[in-house]
Length: 50
Image 1 (cartoon, one colour):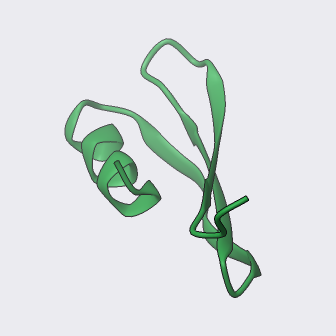
Image 2 (cartoon, rainbow, N blue to C red):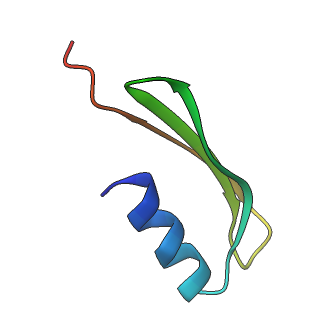
């Protein structure tokens, strides 16, 4: 799943996007969310093969 897909599921299931999707470089992104129990989870996505 992409970060966009995961963040959509997070909000549907009662979580909160703590740090919206941000670009690291043209091929990599990050985001952070908090689940309903208060746990913070970081996401990383890259399209770079290697």
